Image 1 (cartoon, rainbow, N blue to C red):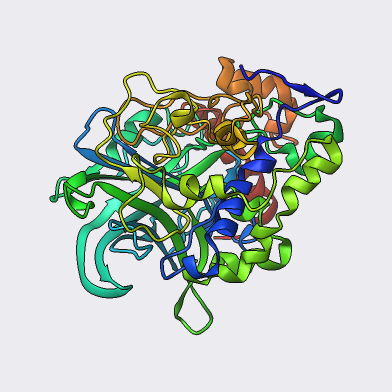
Image 2: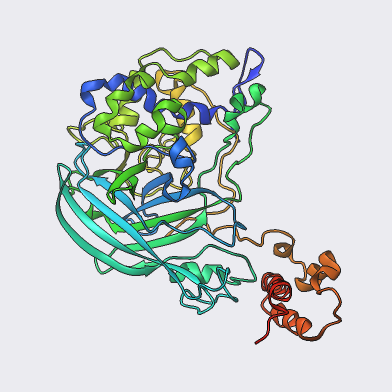
Length: 512
């Protein structure tokens, strides 16, 4: 648990979310305009900009990159989209967009230019368009006839030089996507469906796309005037119980590094969407967490999502004179660090020298990972700050507490101002998997009373009573239909009942 530190009677705990964005702030300021040369931009988080908040299918939430703990000769990249997926949010559950390009970028020589790009594109398939149901019965497999709406995807490997395409190779074709976890009645063994969505490629890579528990853990209530203005709103994982759509790719490390002598890579993700003219345009980008969310003012957020790192000089004022530390000082009387923050440049724009800083590095914001650092047997949540060089900011593992680590550095840890600050959320609400794709299983839609061991149909009957039986009847055909649906579980039971009622009201007097 993070230690509480007092100053002037106010607790200094739980302000990590506010300050973590200042990592990029100080770094870009110190790097200066001339240092921001061509590359591909990164930013992140949940609903961070006005335009993208209205189009969640295209909204990057987080990116992770780490040496695979169970397969150390590979590197795993996890990128997430669609923030705050409510598990019971049907009947139109959560799908990847068909008019989007979901891209994972690799810079393998430190020049801020993309050298490799893995592009995911998706297709949606509907078996029966005459029903509103996502699934028409219990789903036992990804090719189950009762899984009414499915998705598949292709992957292209694009090689670039100075952002010009050198080659394109399709490395995956029509790979099935793991569906949204509708609930226990609809998907009694969701783990089985997840496993069926893990696909091995001929080049030695492994891929996965589908729903997962949101792995980012933090207290996001910072936006209520910095945790209520008195730190009364602290220590709750805001993302607990929500899901995301994940893309995970595990690739042999030798495929993405420049050479064995230069094992450091930069990684980020972007989303491109077709515009009104039919051309693809970048609408979201992601690297370090929370940058666009808490650094850029509202007027710059959409522009930042559409821009590239060589254009980041236009946001220089936002980072040389950051708003966030001043707000914290005004409300909590914690002095804002002196500017410019030269101590943050190497850590967050170049990489830590001797750890994950490539030679002749061009400062730019992306996750930098030294793929030659072996995975830690016992990962420490604060990563490099706690002596665990396999963790953040050397890439980002799912278990890394990036909020606390970022906060401590921003508040002067590297300048000798030792502190133990954090947001009091130290781990994810669900345990991560030990094997690819590592993300936790998504929370199911039936997480209410039925998910807690109640007896299904009888409980539904007791709660809804006579509403389950059409007025003026005592059984008959309606009862048979209801009883038949009970075998499929409470969810199917309710849906078929609703259909019967609709049929009686709208079709009952029609002659055939």
